[in-house]
Image 1 (cartoon, rainbow, N blue to C red):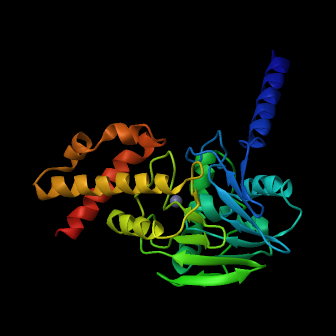
Image 2 (image 1 turned 180 degrees about the vertical axis):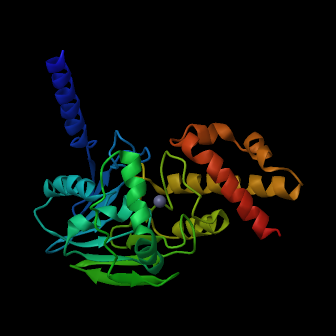
Image 3 (image 1 turned 45 degrees about the vertical axis):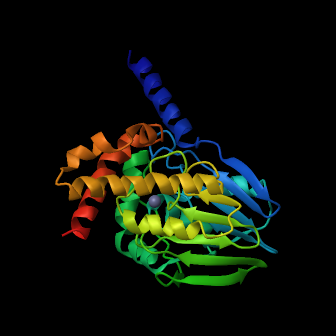
Length: 308
Ligand SMILES: [Zn+2]
């Protein structure tokens, strides 16, 4: 009996070790000869995906690789890097971080020695709240990330600014937007390719998170995105987008704001939002149960403040 119990424990440990090593596959999508999108799963970080749940853009320069976003922790970054090594042998020299949410930057410690660029706000958030982001990721994935090292971006983009630059033969523009998904969103625009890495300002086939943003300003930021000569958009989460997908996303979030504002101005209550919103459109998008309650509450407070 005692021996059987020992075997049982050993089997359990084996199962634990196997799942801890198996991230979901990286879906590689070639955009052109120098740009590849690595598309991850879209669920929130959990014990199944182990924190691998977002997108990365691989930009191949003359001598190295510029990577957009770094994944949720060191092992996710290693998983992403293994996929990059199948595309090119060039080293990762630069990592551009779209915003401060932990799934986008906690993997930075893996890319030791790379030049890291993000918005000033994002850098400050990592400095001030990085440890609690590690705890969040640890709790959600069931992994012990206690030893994780935080990396604060060395180069910081000023709020609401656009910076054109050339890195390793690649012309790109870093765009720090008005508050949209967060107060410090940074998009990466590649004018020669017509490709935009939007971070979570745009997500495809999932509910966006309004929690740390401002929905009214967000709609304006998407209007600005639509002024760019877009060919392909890599959203923060979900499949690649075309211009029409962005138009539809804009309509969806603009309607959300309009519905909440209409109810508020007519003297209604927050609970009315679920009745008036076109729920069928939102329900068919992923993460509905995780996001909808918080999103309604956030926009309700936003509208209340704007009309106070
Ligand atoms: Zn985010």
